[in-house]
Image (tube, rainbow, N blue to C red):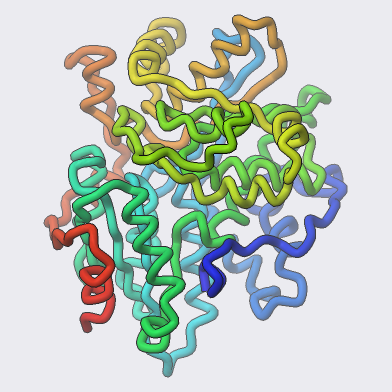
Length: 413
């Protein structure tokens, strides 16, 4: 379903406790064992190992970042679309391959995207006979390269350029998922992080990284996660809650500072409208997965004890890309820069906890921002898999910020 009929979000009924030291250290093997716990009794229980084999064809390495004390980058961008979203999207596609029956009409996979989700889902579901993908992205609010990645598919992928923000796209998607009359005409699911099937595989790379570090150093590993819709942070929180040796979890947002303000006691769960920033995939005014974190920590005091959050400005993003390059030779994307800047702040305040910053996307996806920060002479090589995708011709349809327009697109054959 992707989303319950009442418009809420699915949550695991309970979070099982595991003995992490009995788990294998290699990511795919660990993922098979950990995900199997969540699929007990499910019709897909016997398929978990095969679904992991379909998904984890690329690594998530910990790269030392010694210029900022005991720290790493957790590189999550080695998949086909150079984004951490490849893990969840490929797992979801593998699940639907097994759920869908041959005599059923294709399922419509509806996606609202602020940059990377849509490309990852399109790559995972492209030319799959059991699915039709409909991508919605905010017109003019994704990078040129991201827009090309969202619109170069054709076949069973329809790309809709919406005259609005990401939050408008997400609102339209939720309306469609909750529309009983529409769902009676066509089967719809979603591949956004509102779908728990997108988030469960994401917890595994945090679990594996924490276990690897614990084996080497005998200490817990903290994580700093750049995020907009907060799904990636929820995944890290679940990995910690079930028993993996994870220390502090910190959220780094861009100027869309809903989470830091919420934790400061404002009571606000959304901005009136999202701000357009250099870290555009995080331009979210109403982060859906705040509801899931609030379900885990209904008391604000407990929430603050469990998760720390700070916002990072565009000027700081550019400065951090420059500083990181000058100090280490590493080029990071604008989203990762939010996480590294938060780490730098924590070091300035005296924290010496060992952290891994989630490097959520390859810097080659943001050439304009890299050029703005480092100058036009610095060119980041494009990953071959992403370069191949971008050779495809562009196909997209503009629509107004209107539910009737989306309904019409969804019902087109």
